[in-house]
Length: 122
Image (cartoon, rainbow, N blue to C red; front, side, top):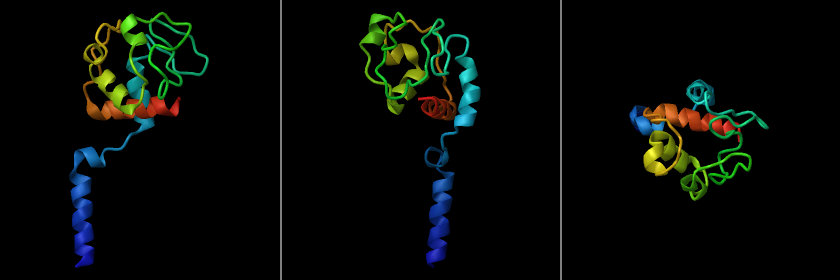
């Protein structure tokens, strides 16, 4: 009976997309290819159209000293997983008035993977 309950619990967890989907930094590296035209990720990398994103997870938005941010981005909060997820899903809604010309990453798993990749490089 205990074994049957354990198997049922495992099946329920495995079939729940929100619970079963883990972050994959390697897959996130592929998603980051969309970002490379405007951002670099390596430590000490240059800014491009957008700021260097090395260390972005946990840092205050608009805080790379060598990059000229919009006022909206300067006044945004710190980049944690939840704020990154909202911003990457819809940049214009998450930080109204920001100057990033990107529609966002609509696929939830792709965003999770991208955030894992950003965390790995933070």
